[in-house]
Image (cartoon, rainbow, N blue to C red):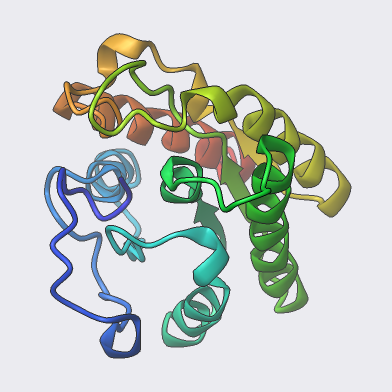
Length: 203
């Protein structure tokens, strides 16, 4: 969802990945966020780097997150949304919903801890809804518990929550997982509102 594609390209391995020093694909919410920022803050040059990597999951991405922070220099804020692929993956034998949610949120907590240790504030998103009985909507049963756990973790670790999970189901495409173009635009607006509220100052 962050990279902004509907189907994972699987063109790179994690070992080959490097952070694109741009907002990424035009359909992605980071690209749309950059457009909103540029339109409002015309006297400033503000960079938005899109660290999305389609098909990856949070539990495998703690090291990649650290790499992205290093390659970005020292960003003024991290916008973090990850975990949908973890929730959509089949449960391991003997693994329950609670254990899966806990393992994913623990990985996100590691990322928040890594950023805050570097002095970088984190805004973390709840996950958007998924369509039941759709090709990629396998995480529906996990979402409420996951989003509640993200809120609790964020409160404990000093991260700010952006409620992307509040967008209507109508903003989710027919694959059941990825937002429509309007959905990506709405996610960008939610991030933009959060960034404005936190960082904008009257002249």
